[in-house]
Amino acid sequence: MLEVKNIRSNKEAYVRALLKRNFEAKEIINQVLELDELRRHSQTQLDEVLAKSNVISKEIGMLFKSGKADEANVLKAQTGELKEKSKSLSEQMDKAQTDLNELLYQIPNIPNELVPSGQSEDDNEEVYAEGDVPDLDKNALPHWELAKKDDIIDFELGNKITGAGFPVYKGKGAKLQRALIQYFLDKNTEAGYTEVQVPHVVNEASGFGTGQLPDKEGQMYYIGADDLYLIPTAEVPVTNMYRGDLLEENALPIQLTGYTPCFRREAGSYGAHVRGLNRLHQFDKVEIVNFVKPEHSYQMLDDMVEHVKGILVELGLPYRILRLCGGDIGFTSALTYDFEVYSTAQERWLEISSVSNFETFQSNRLKIRYKDKDNNKKLVHTLNGSSLALPRVLAGILENFQTPEGIKIPKVLIPYTGFEIID
Image (tube, rainbow, N blue to C red):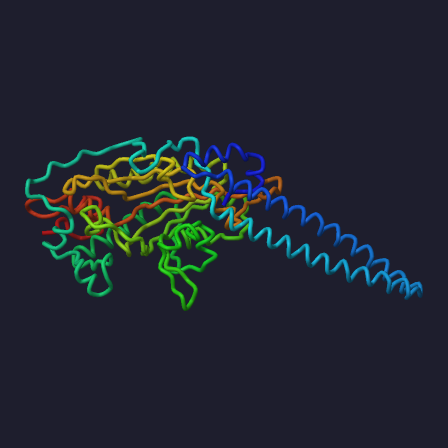
């Protein structure tokens, strides 16, 4: 959520910046400023009324002590009127604040100056690529056919148990999945991240805190009886661990990693681009989350990008990095880099990670602050990234490492799987 004080001082700049997202902000920002003015005016009036009421209350006490009950009772009548006025002003101020928040929840984050202009994913900017695309056998198969042939992932069984988008991993497929999770966690903890295990359901406040609500409400699974949501990513519970906290400056940066299943209702269209593991309603992901001082956040973003690059190099997967354009960047992000792995069998790129800096957009909602050496309270910057999302990484491994003899396991994973080939 944007900070109102920044909107007041950067109104025109914010309107221009949001146009990069193809978001017409002028009208809603004017409404924000009008409500903010009403809220601040109500607060000023309320403070004056309360101050006057306190003065009169002291006078009443002195009059009663002096035996001037009649004069005291006259003033008591005034305090009654002031009490009603303060109640009315307080209600007016609270309503203005509620209406203001409702508007602020609708405004996306200000994109960083590095974000390219554009309308859709077609306008994203490739900034890096590495790895050679393997020359596969002419009979190479896409991962969903490999999975069926080797009986390692059963999509039809998942459909029987739950529905489309909920696969069942079997045998070496399940072991490879578990190996990837452990490998990702080990790489993250070796890089200084602290591992956490968090709930897989969150309350409404947590969803609002990280920006999934109300922006992506329709994409989340809702548990009506308990007013809870299945998490779309570990980002939500992990970031909310510090909701409302005042951190010490020397505690920063805080670097956390966690594995969770993720649940997304987003409906997919039909076709090869959503077949198999390409788009699921339930999938596994290992996340990294950072809480840092503002002046360090973009260096941290670069460090996260390098960290994910290192993992993909070890896995031996050809990949590229895209800087997302204004029309494709997420609602809460100021700058996002997407990692994509090339699927040789499908002849297309598969997104396997997003690494983002949210600046103060999340921390303002969450009220996560730190106290600097001068005892000033400042909002932290939050960042997160997939390190990594498993389904498409697994798809890339199955497709790119297939040979006539079977699917070879990347060397770095063999200590985790206990086998070298799926045949």
